[in-house]
Length: 415
Image (cartoon, rainbow, N blue to C red; front, side, top):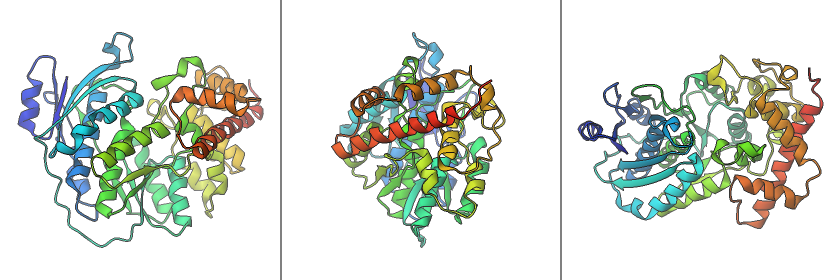
C-alpha cells in the first residue's frame, strides 16, 4: 500500500505502518521518509497566473502515481513485471474525483500494465499562491527535448504562435531543452517541473507512468495561462507503438501518447470540470514527415541536438539502436535532412542487437500488408479512435512509419 500526502506528519504516520509506504508529496524526502517534488512549489510560482484547486489536485494524483511507480519494484511481483499497487492520494477537494476513479484506474492499468487500486481522499494542500502577470502565450506544449517535441514547438512558431513549453528537467534532457528553446526563440518561455524522488535506492527503472507526470505539469500550466489545449507532439508510430515482435506486446512497450490513453485522460479531465484537453496534432503523421515539413534555417543542427534515446541513462549519449533511436534515424533518412547526432553505436555493427532485430522484423512484416491486416496488428497495442476518419489516418500513418524504418534498413551495409 502506498499512501501519498503533502502533510509530512501524515506521510510519516502511514510509513510507520507495516506494509505501507508513506510518501511526502512536494517534500524533500530522506532515507527514512520517501518524498518527491520539493522544488516543484518554487517552479509553479513562475507561471503567469493562479492555479485552480482541481488542476493542482490532478498534479498531486499524477505525482503520487509516479512515486508509487518508482518506489514499488516490479522484481517483487510474481511474474517479475505486473504489480498490484494500492494507492491512496490526499487532495484538497476529493469530491470531483470520486466519479472518475474508475476511468483513471483504467488509464493507469493501460499505461503501466499493473493492477491499480486507487483511492482519492481529502487532506491535501491548496495550490501555491501565484501572482497574476501579463503573458502572450497562446498554447502550452510538452517539451521533452526530443525531436518530436522540438518539431511540434517549431510548428507552432512557424504558425505565428508563442507557446509556453513544459518540461521535466531530468539530467540527460536539460541541456537539449535549453539549446532547442533558444533556437526556437523561446529562451525563458519554459516551465520546468523538476520533480525528484528521494528514498532508498534502487528505484524501479521502467517508469511507465512518467508521462502522467508530464500531463500533470501541462494541465497546471494551461490552467495558469487560461488556455484549454495541451499539445503533446508525437508521431504515429511511437504514439501507437505496435508490438514489433510477440515478446513486445502490451506494457512491455510504452504507451505514453497512445490515443486510448489520451481519450481516457480527457474523459477524466472533463469529468472533474477541468477545461483542458490533451491533443496530439501529429497522430496521423510520421516522424520523417514531421521533419520534412519543418522549416528553420538551422533545422539540421537543432534537430541533431534533440534527444530521443530510450536507453540513454545507460550511457553518456544516444545509443543509436534502441527503437526510438532507430525511428529517429529513419526520420532523418526519409526527410533528407543531415543527421549530425553523435550516436554511441554504428548501425551497421548492430545487426544482432535485440531492438534492431525487432525493428527489422517489424518493418519487413509490414511490407505487403493491406489496411485490414495492418489495423489488426495496430489494435494489439490498444483501442483505436472510434472516429472512422481518425482511425484510418492513424493506421495508415503507422504503416508509413514502418516503411520509413524499412527504407533506412535497406540502405545499411550490415556487418
